[in-house]
Length: 112
Length: 117
Image 1 (tube, rainbow over the protein chains, first blue to last red):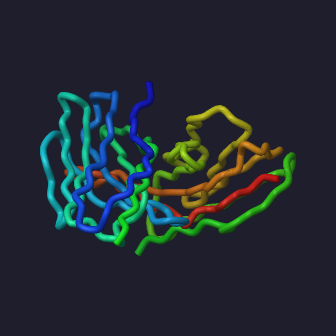
Image 2: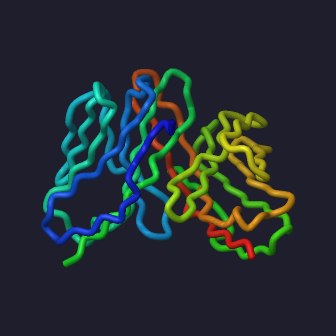
């Protein structure tokens, strides 16, 4: 079983739509849940992260974690064409564990 | 400020030829260093990571190897490339948070697009 699973898409939505991106993970030791955004032909950049269960909001973006079901989500409100990118989830736990793993990434296209 | 340099940006190599990709980080000490490969439809695959000079952890058995000859230098190599080695290779660095910190962020280079022909 992979440590993190993510539907690669592609996902195509009209401008203004609400987008839901999801990942599941298998290791209950994960504490931090990060979302990276990757534009075409570029390296990924950290978008936001949450710690443990709950929600975190940053502008039009909301990250949500449900540790009981090992399910993490990223919601994008009022999506814009500039949001078109690949979104990768990256669960992590500290305590001397230095490996950073990523989901497969979901390719999102927001069309005008 | 910290920067990461990765080169070359693109590379076309014949099957069976050797490979050497280099990554250097500036502005930080003792970073964790990572090599990832991103193939179409397969996501970001961790190949190697290093927590210090000469310390390399391999995640995927393959014909690639990595070395860290200096604190801020990470090299990905192959003696003989295969067609399946084609992909987008990304180097990244991170540091563990200071005491009381809660997160570690990975900073990526611009990547090398390798095509093996």
